[in-house]
Length: 100
Image 1 (cartoon, rainbow, N blue to C red):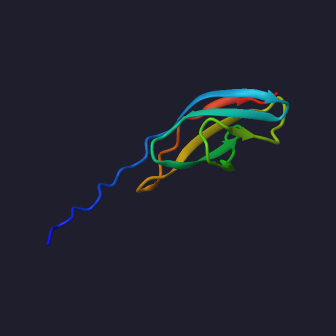
Image 2: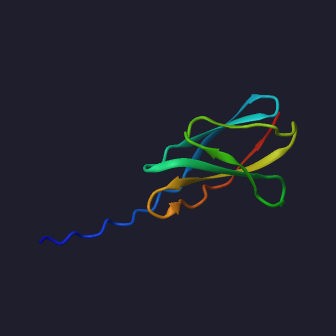
């Protein structure tokens, strides 16, 4: 009988928001660097010093479309990866962008 060592716990890397693009009025597209072993990406937004609000979960890092935003409003955006052995990565650094 052979002994098996348990699989190593591997946390997900922290995502990196590479770009925020105005694609249409009230819509922003995020481009996030893919995280190895991530199954999805969770996005949160807020304005000013308000509470973070969920903006959805997305299966692909490069096709995240945030809709229903208010033109002229500056949003803070953060992303975390979902998956891996610990469930979630740390939140990305916060990015600020104005919806047009």
